[in-house]
Length: 102
Image 1 (tube, one colour):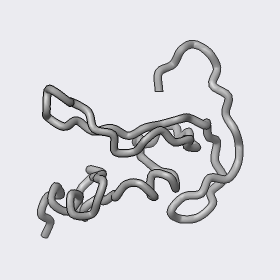
Image 2 (tube, helix red, strand yellow):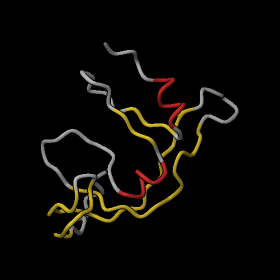
Image 3 (cartoon, helix red, strand yellow):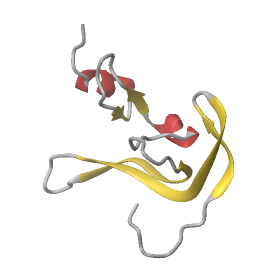
């Protein structure tokens, strides 16, 4: 998120995560997820159209994707022993692009 010099209003409350409701500080943002296609004629592909999301503020942590709307539209995976988050539109694309793990 780019800092414009204006304070961003935050909210204290519960956010639904994969683990259940968690008390957090968050901001409401409209987000869209896009991916590069490698095609110069159409370089971007929309994976998830614009959705209102509660974006949790976590100082000192690695950025991550979360939210029930994201889980409703995309497939996520982090292979065992790998710190990379893989995101895809469907399960077959996700599995095809993940590295082999032993």
